[in-house]
Length: 107
Image (tube, rainbow, N blue to C red; front, side, top):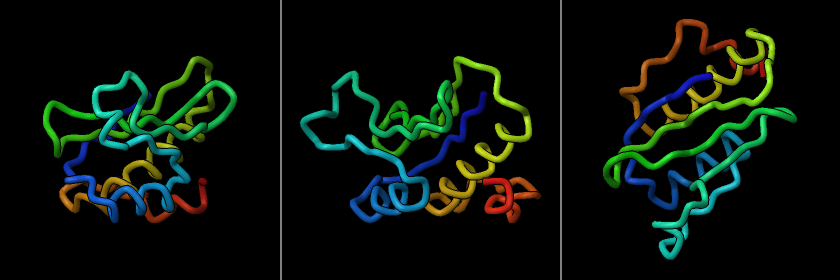
């Protein structure tokens, strides 16, 4: 559906902010670094989820929206805006969509 790349050292404060902002369930314990378990996940609906994905190096991350169903475009747009807003809190270079102020209305 969508991917929102961002940069972050993923400090404890950054992890806490993502957890609070998105209600994300995280698995970032150092022992799980090479684990196949995704670092974070949020169930969006019965067939969709938002996944926190590691990038090529320690500071590269992405929030990826994935689905196995067919959610309405308006709903997907809301999920995308919410992911953009969360990533922007950790990385101000993430460009917010011009309608990002409406995230709370859609979500």
